[in-house]
Image 1 (cartoon, one colour):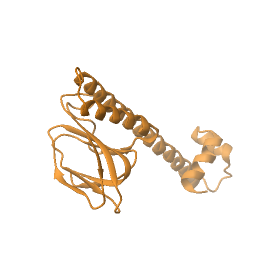
Image 2 (cartoon, one colour; image 1 turned 60 degrees about the vertical axis):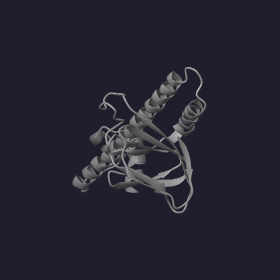
Image 3 (tube, one colour; image 1 turned 180 degrees about the vertical axis):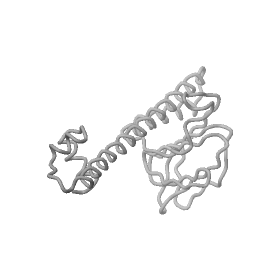
Image 4 (cartoon, helix red, strand yellow; image 1 turned 90 degrees about the horizontal axis):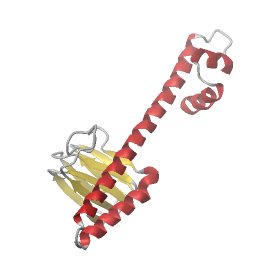
Length: 196
C-alpha cells in the first residue's frame, strides 16, 4: 500500500502474522515497535517482524507519506523463517538507495492496483527485490557502524598510549610505530574523534 497521512494521525498498536516493511518517502513520522519509539524521515525504513506489536503516527504536525508491504512464507538467511532481521535494529536509512527503493514500491503498487493476467509472479518478484535490497542496505549500514566503532577504538588506543607515555617525546612517527596505524590516519581520525 501507499499512504499519505496528514498531521495528528496515529495508528493504534497492532501486530500481523506477516513481516511488514514501512518505507517513508516524505515528511516525518514515528513508529513504535514493541514499546520503543523510533523517529522516521524520508528515506527511512522500518521493519516489523511477525507478532511484534507496532504503531505509527505523525511527528511535529508534519505529513507522513510511506509505502508498506506485508510478506509471508519467506526466508533470507541468516534470519529465521518469516523474519527480516534481528529486532535490535528495526529502523535505518536507505541512504543513496532511497530513489531505487521508491521505484520498486511504485512498481509494486502499479502491479497490484490493476491486476492483469499473470501479475502475481511480478508482484512476488518485486517483493523479493524489495526485501533483498533492504537486507543489502541493512548490511551496509551495519558495516558502516562497525567501521565507525573501529575508527573510534583506534583513537582510544592512541589516547591510551599517550596517557601512559606522556613523559616521553611523542610525535606522529612514535604513535604510528606503536600502533601500526599510518600517520595520516592517526592525524585525521584522532582529530575527528577527540577534537584535537
